[in-house]
Image 1 (cartoon, each protein chain N blue to C red):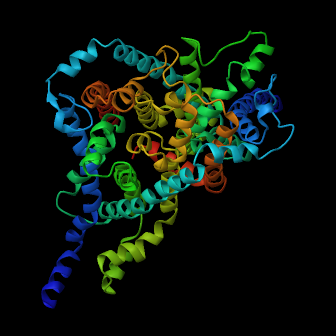
Image 2 (spheres, rainbow over the protein chains, first blue to last red):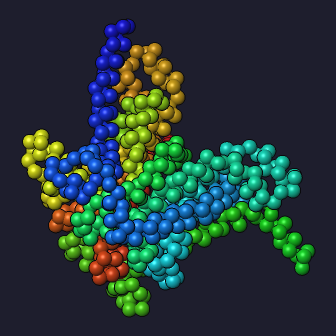
Image 3 (cartoon, chains in turn blue, purple):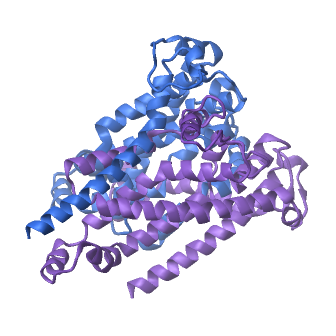
Length: 278
Length: 299
């Protein structure tokens, strides 16, 4: 028995080593970039390269502000991420609630159609969608950026599962008390699925914040760029101003990192439910 | 008037009627911004057109025929399939192994999981910037380390053949943690008495993995595999920020080329849409296969 225990412990050693190597591979690019954002230019292009900065400077950030409208990008990213998430929170929970709690004619068929829209690949419809939004006069403004991104069958599906588990008595009691159907949804049921709401908010903000393709397509004015596409276009112009690029990338990364540190549980939950067939 | 208002209210306040009001906003948005563009895409793919429909000319299958003869299209299709065929298995096997090793909710396991899952908060832009410079041919940290190890000076982002491998590596780096998390939650749902019974029978850990864990998580694994294949076929942002299709189009994927034709040079909307229909066809075939297998395994 003892030798078996010893053996499992010995097996554990190489496994931990592998874990650590993999963690190293994951962390080096991110940490190195964050460090480099604070290195002076001469050190960034120094050979051999350094890992830790030998001196800290904020010069890259001031240079970043001079070269690109980083605050405008930041503002646009916030507008895009928050502006799409709030209506998304409302509209998708509303639909999810109806599918979870109500019986109505055609419910199953309508739900299947909703789910089928999940299978429409964005990359396939992006051009007609662009043409459509362009024709609606929403090209190069916030409406065009935000409105197509609000409804999502994926969120509706997730909200439906969240609402499905709540006890029937709650809404029956509220109905007897004379609350309207919308009142039952908004005042009784919505507060009960807070964890699912937080998951939606976090994943949606993160997804839109990091979204590159849609802002790239639907905006052209440099004043409309988000951090993700503004920086990509800055770097794509084959810039050699790595310092400014690092600083910009750090600015875009840090808010999401903070969200990850505090809300990791919700990131995990959102991914886990998306991957589980049910 | 007031009475009429009241009766309208009470009509829509009946649960079976309110339901339609509740799903209406989402239904309209999904219709306008998902379904209509999909239907429109078939029409647009038959047109020779720029940004506006005014100068559009119907050319039937013209765009599709042109695509088949277009070297860059055929090349991008090849690159996309090559990328998917290599990236997905690596990511899935790595995800499967890591999730098997990290299933238990111990402190160290949670720590490693959150490290592997970290790229979920990195935009493709940030990932592109970090890897462009860490793999830089002159001042890149990894380039330096590789040279120190005696492999010579490798130009990771500008060597035909190798650069696609680099893109695949970065893509695995970015996504295997997500697969790991999904598979862990599937594994944690396997009833523990299965394992207890196997322990009593004296089955080893590896044996247990293959005869209990793997069959139990098969539906999730299969679903994840399909999502990953479909996601990889649509790869765009990483290529855009890391290599922009270079060198010499060796990393140019289908969506990168479609983007290029539609929004970068020429604004050939009809042609670009026709090319993306090929992608749609492939994805539909995979979806049908997935559906058939799903139905079969449920029997």
